[in-house]
Length: 356
Image 1: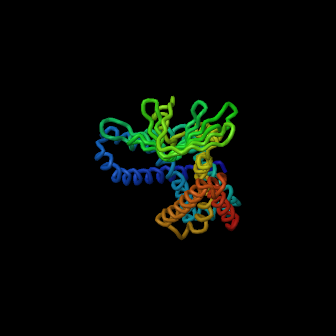
Image 2 (image 1 turned 60 degrees about the horizontal axis):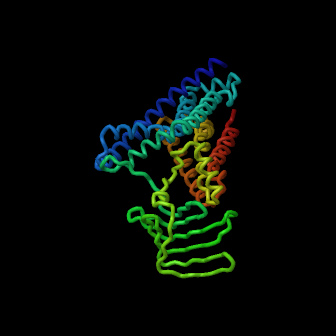
Image 3 (image 1 turned 90 degrees about the vertical axis):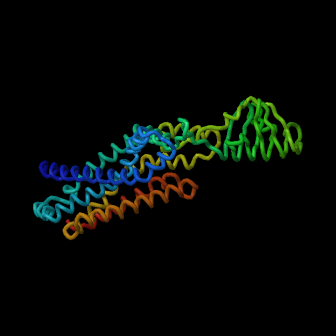
């Protein structure tokens, strides 16, 4: 059994490396042709363009690894079936589990390794290539700022801004809440527009509500408030989940919880960081029975076609579920792991239906 285990493992690993390198070359070639001229038009230095593709490689590998694992599974068992080696193994009393166990173990190791790189390598690399992608002439790096639904907590005051005009330095749809030590609202100011200059916040077309002893209303066309805040305080960077580690994203979610803000979409992205690497183990579960059933009649081209179809079906299902999770239609766990559960069940049922 040790010899058989090594034999299948070696064949699978060789095919896996061949598949992933082939996919990587194809992906980089297409991406290079589409992105090189765009980056060049923005006067991005050639060395930075090279760094762009270097830093993007970990993300590409993460995306193509599940499909490479699936294709390697189909080819490994397909070749064994065509050479009647699977038939001989079965005749010797070797079970389907023993035949497929080397593939499943290596696939599990690939999943764990992908999970490790997704936490310790991918966020940093993604941040670097995104910085180059946002490059603007003059050597400046463009930072992606949050421009809508901004909350800012100051000393005894809370700001909520519907939209921030970064070009003109104007706030649109401003709500200001003054709170006491017990965080009870004592005053609310709603303004259609506001501009902050030299420590003064100029509010236009709004209404003030005071909640001290009795409710009081006061409409205004223009109102000036002294403030300690600066305009730059409101221009916080938009956090991108793919640029954050699991730990940092989890801390950001806890921060949103304390602030009383919606954090559902970030929980979905947090769980997806675990769910997607597991596809490297789940997709071979579907590939194993498929290869054993059709291995003798299908060739390499068919294997490539099947892996692409299954891989893209998984991708579409995963993306659809995550989008539903972001808008709150699906619970975060189902949004992230729904595709894995469905494909894992299909794989297990298919394996059980294979004649041993």
